[in-house]
Length: 396
Image 1: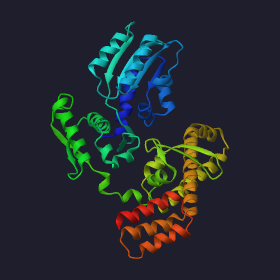
Image 2 (image 1 turned 30 degrees about the vertical axis):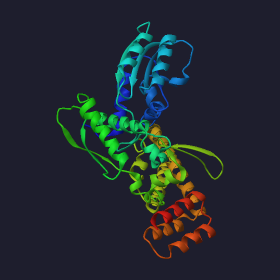
Image 3 (image 1 turned 90 degrees about the vertical axis):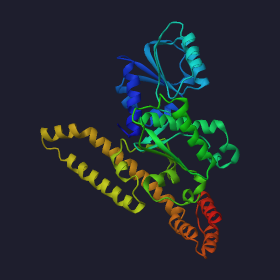
Image 4 (image 1 turned 135 degrees about the vertical axis):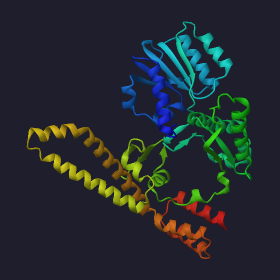
């Protein structure tokens, strides 16, 4: 039984596409599931599975494409069901395969059946993939404006609670293990989420969550970020965390403008980047040595490829060329990112700021003087100053 979340998502999507049999396919997604698929598959991988068109359900083409089999993977929301009904009535595709990322209401099922006048829908299934797997052991529910959870009103908003419960339930169902649920006792929202997940699994849909072996070794631990507001304010010094804080990662994509004003759109995923997989949790100092070794190894390979003196040498180079291109792209990507991180750290004096942060959270008496000095005398950018002031306010 796999606990690899990326592998599970890949399996779900591959099964959807294989059930549509051989032939050209269109993959139709919504604003959420496009991130689910995008984090697990590249365009090349989708092409290998005969997907020649990827569209969003709210902007599908109106022209007839009966040569394509349409595979829909969307959330079971009322809006998506309405859009699906409109598409079924317009009937632009040959066959239809409908997959929903969570439970579909019976009334919505009936509505879809009535809209399928040509009886072209070959498949309707619930696929429990209402989460974005960023790497094998990490997923996100992509809840927008999650900072609002700190307000009392938002923490009692049923829509927000339901979003969390649906995502957690989908992850539990995908892992095929009923977990032991533990939550933070002094947190109201943690208790609400825990109770709702338990009620869904034990009372509302017991057969769906029954795997015949009771609770396994899986644990669902629900914690409240308010219990530790300081940690997110501290400067991060491991590779993935630094990129997220200083450049921003969104669904494994890093978008930024480098110092030359050139737009950079890079993919950082542990599933298809061996270097990143090995060093995503390496500290800044070790990362520098690792990138230098990566560059040195690549330069050594490049020099050996220049000495092509025989047909056998040329043949070996051609056979290894795809791997050579992949390595070239990896070197360029990580050198670009490390260069940009170094410039941001140097220009904003973040090493000194981080030292002050540590002294603040450790309760040093002189920390207030140091904070004032950093605010008025350093070239630190405003977000880091705001974090430093937040640390000061929270720990005093």
